[in-house]
Length: 94
Image (cartoon, rainbow, N blue to C red):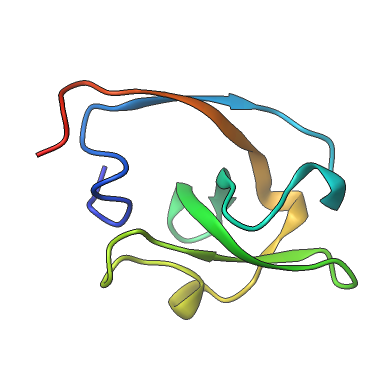
């Protein structure tokens, strides 16, 4: 739920993710990932930067005022559930 990834995703859309082992070779800038955050639960965001040395990613929202690493900080790779490989729209984008 929420608008932080609008217009890419809207309420009611589904995504198919590939669970991947903790390895930076599986992720690149622009990938959309699903991860767990201690305060906000399960989130979906786009990778903007990768820090291979510290095994963290900086994620951004599609919407300008969406919640992302500007508020959350860097996301530890251990928190990533998987990478989005397909999306299923509930309705056409507005």
